[in-house]
Length: 220
Image (cartoon, rainbow, N blue to C red; front, top):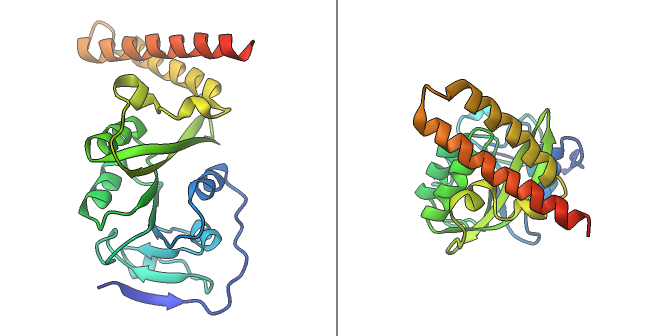
């Protein structure tokens, strides 16, 4: 069972604005549905969404009165979940939480370490990418996606890059940042690791095609 730690009686307005990533996460959550945020951290996102806020350990729950706080390991203590928000943790851990259920009707996820791996995992495990958005985060971009049960039609680097990412106004800048990253990877491993070198070249060719196509379309 879930360990209910607290339930606020006087909701206060949470700072829904602030970090760009938080705004993007909130924008991807469908309205009118019960939301569970796994690993609520400071609780700002959960408060903005009116979500049930969870952490695995009681001492990690935020000290605030405007949230329904629950001590829970992932989603397993819930009988059913409409919408799950699982962000800011590792891709493998997100996959594990989704796999151990119960299966939400919608999940908004963000893995700062391996977003491409998470997309492939979702596609291999019966999830379809329904929407994606980018948020500036330092010199990089946070990749937030909304997934729903279904068959993902995309594969290869189209899937790894994000099939909905080209619709985001920051897609061009994100692709340029990835070009810098994979160029640096290739410079480090060329002549030392044939497999990684081939992966880097494949990514660079894909990104260059995307940037050339995107640039042509933006001039029309």
